[in-house]
Amino acid sequence: MAIVIAIANQKGGVGKTTTTINLAGALAERNLRVLCVDMDAQANLTVGLGINLAEVQESMATVLGEHRTSLKEMILASGTANIDVAPATLDLASTEVDLLSAIGREYALAEAIDHWAQAHYDYILIDCPPTLGLLTINGLVAANGVIIPVQTQYYALKGLTALVKVINTIRAKLNKNLRILGLLPTFYDSRTVLGREMLGEMREHGDNHVFDTIIRSAVKLGEAPLTGRPITHYATNSDAANNFRELAKEVIALG
Ligand SMILES: Nc1ncnc2c1ncn2[C@@H]1O[C@H](COP(=O)(O)OP(=O)(O)OP(=O)(O)O)[C@@H](O)[C@H]1O
Ligand SMILES: [Mg+2]
Image 1 (spheres, helix red, strand yellow):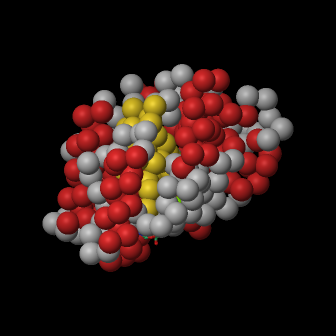
Image 2: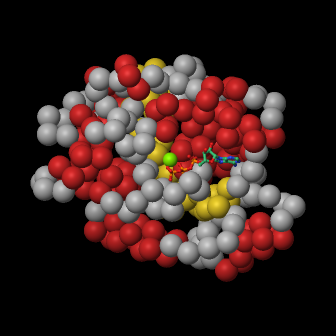
């Protein structure tokens, strides 16, 4: 059975997609089979894993839409061994609107992750959009665990309460298996006082587990999407690649 992990934070640009792609890379190089599910109409995950959007015909929009294509039918191989992609396209935005009036609207993704997908992959990583809307809720309802990337910058912890509240409600009402695997500090810069203070605040004052791994700010991580490959494969000896290997180790240990 696959371990299903949602990467979520309604705040934009905190490193959700980067975490998804590169955690996938670090798991894949351990010979674990990974499916990356793109729940964001921006399709950054899809493009970042080397898929040409012009060639995508069936996407998460069709999986979650009225006719419900199965994941098996629409999954694409990324350019990286052991990583498949369930791509997004722009029309996922209108799918979210259509879902609003559908029966069982919160369970569409959980249902799509069927026996085949559960048996075929070791990890299924769901990259959520920067909203607390129905697509993110579908991601959280389908997941066993959630990783919350948090930028180690000012105001980063603001808004976290709203996310944790949604997660707690989903756990109480829709998916009792959902647990917060941890907050993941991202964009860390040890040279700034602010970065160090924020990290301290997360560790000391928060109620949630914080990963030991810290994802540092790294120019190479910003460039990796252009290569269509995870940093573990694109700059295999970089500190950033090693950051994600440490994260993979922690995630595996959490079970
Ligand atoms: N640790 C890092 N160091 C440097 N650049 C980074 C780092 N993490 C992410 N980036 C870059 O910052 C931008 C935002 O990151 P990313 O797309 O992963 O965030 P996101 O939370 O998925 O954003 P959105 O909310 O729009 O989906 C991207 O251009 C990415 O390449
Ligand atoms: Mg993103």
